[in-house]
Length: 195
Image (tube, rainbow, N blue to C red):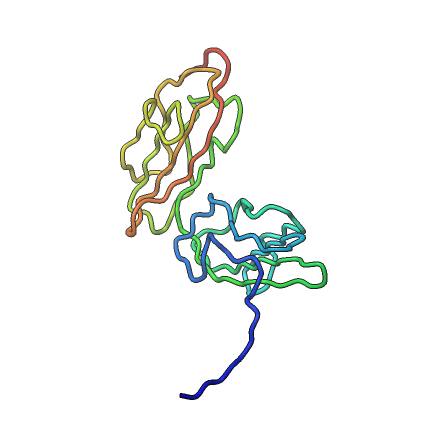
């Protein structure tokens, strides 16, 4: 028998939980999440259009291990970097990922108040879409108030909705790989409205 010895130190830095490296169809309505690192003083998230860039997301130093990045481009290869701050140095982990190409709401938008249901619900188009489905309900993901079924268009007039109530909408995009969706909540106008 013969042997060779070595000593090493394991890496202690934040690593991405979502999305992961080389992930495809990344749902940009979900937050970026990463592991915590022992002894870390802060974290700093970059998202950019090139490796190491922060032209899309630049959080500054934060204590949290997640961050919701709004309005990232769809159907694009992007780059993420999570920095970990230690007392005497910074360390980072990089990932590359591709965002999904799915519809997102134009009207109403998330947390919008005084939504007039007589105005059509509208959403962005997706070049990869096989169809869309709009649902509206009294709880997240529910369709007890409106369900368009699978349609080709990017707008839909919902039937009468209760006034002055918190409601939940979902626009789902049928893609070759399955369904992707965006959820929103909104409050309808107080009182009567014209249909």
